[in-house]
Length: 628
Image 1 (cartoon, rainbow, N blue to C red):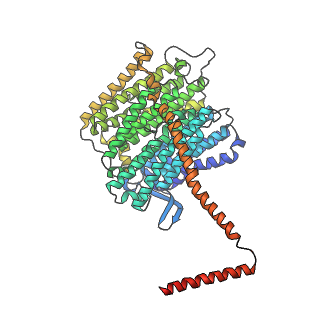
Image 2 (cartoon, one colour):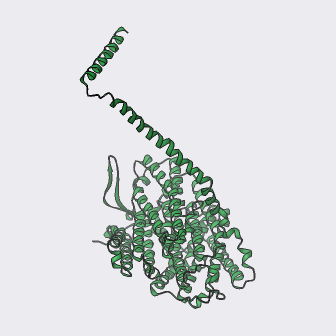
Image 3 (tube, rainbow, N blue to C red):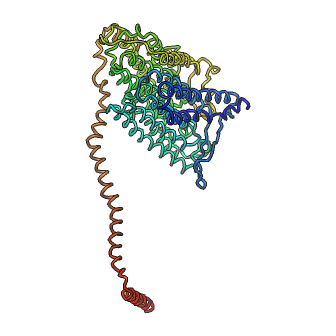
């Protein structure tokens, strides 16, 4: 096998987590702890190794040869329509599988320590392996139906994982909320799939992106896809499920909210960049402004949260908004770049928060932390790396990717840029608040609390992710075209749809300087309020932020009041009208049959009389027609 033929090993990438899932279903409980955890981790580690081999195979190919389809078998043959189980191996999908499997492997390893002693230890890894398999199917599918199969798979697994401790009513409700909210987005995906099939006669990406399409049809498909993307990637107004999903175990939060499920919508829109460029001009603008609104809205809410995981949850919603702004401004490389760096620093911070919660005996309220850096040094140092990355401090990775988005926002619309820059400053402020309240200042924990550092299975992933969060910015440095590694790598997948900047490098340096000043101001404001306490925290944390602008409460009240009545009316209409028609037809047939049965007397004379009557009727009918 030559180096370029290593891409043929792509089937191993989803197959290994699927094999791990099957093995754990059969023998997981018998294997118990920690063997079940190590098997689940080894399966994903094998998938990561296979992804690296596929990546090496891709590097050996030229630019135009870096789009390869590997067909396993025909799944649905139906006349002219057929769907294959086939994997699309291109720079975009390979980028995704590298960080999905890499980060998932670290989260699996972390979970061995975090889930220690749990009664359903092996079941947890069953769900994790199935989730990773579904995510890889979503990314690698060469057609919309296979992608949708993975799309639904991650949705179902997220329900199982979020409500893993379903004995608590809040956890069970959070799982149902995520499941139901995502169904709204799934409707959009299905509508887009139907439009695509009616337009192209195919739902395979290669055929769709090489065919002609009208602007109106492209607009309809992209708008439907945007609905699906907003559901999975938690954009306004469908972000509601994500903060509540923090009810699940912390490794689940890191897996779903950092590197996998929430990136699905971003991936989907980047994959459909040819149709996005063919759509009406108001569609990209709509995506950008929804992204900006979501980013700013979630950033303000994060300022008022005291639960460490809730701060990170709203931070995720906000950062996803940045990625949607990038897509809306045609900066697809910047969107993927921020998706990769976000996967590293957000997984790092979620796992770091889990380490804090583990060391604080399940306490999640930051008002009861303080000074933890002294007793949890590894967790503190690695978490600080993640903080500096998301705050946009150079040379940490988040600075480079976020600055790239800001540059394209400036290129597209100056108002968009100013508002996005303000959101970036808020990000630096609320993440500084989290770090200062948790790791610095006076200790505020109870006397019976004994915070301690986590075991090596938990701290090792933190260290690896901290290195990635620090160095991932090197993937696409802005200095010269020669160091735009990610941009050059993704070119074949973007079909030349990346936006061009209208200004030179000097303007980019000025914008980078403004971004650095902005992040510095956000951090200084955090120091003034939460370390030096020159300004009372209550003055910058109005109740409306803590209550999430009352949006969740309003939706819940609407769904529980008028919404419940509307749903009940719909159910009643279904029972009385739809079911009534079906039941009425059946009753009519039954009554008619009963009357007809009475004619079956068993007497030959009666049948002869009936035949005679029929003959007379027929004769009369023929005579009547003859007379005309």
